Length: 218
Image (cartoon, rainbow, N blue to C red):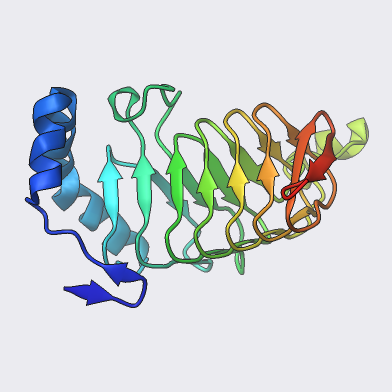
């Protein structure tokens, strides 16, 4: 059996059986995954999020979707939400959140994330085959205004600006991606970075604030 990205591995292939023998915790993870699948499917159905092909969930994520917002996710999604699902130890389940009417969280094919948060008040757009390391936070909002008087009057009226992460990006663990950022295709963001400005395609960037270190082919 194949799909447009290549062959689909059988569920009980020889490679999977060998992996279960060599790494017995993987068998337990798969059992937990299958047991939690009905609850996860119900969660997405109630939120009005179309179910994609080849989705895999290790633990049930947290979905906070405004009824007049949009969450769309491509095929091949993998979300790891339990400490057992990754040796880096997700601090909490993956959180998918749209907080306002008209907010959009749009994720392409082959997206993977361990723990962490995607929170959109305006728009977060993620391309195909993007991988996000453990406990990464990606937000398009400041949440709260900078001015103290404005915070008292309107505590949740922070500035917003869309976030775009293009195809093939890897975001290292414990990274924070803030509002208004575009990360160019196939770039790598080093662990523990704080991304406050645009990152061009095809580079390695890291730091607080994140800066380009070198081209990927350098």
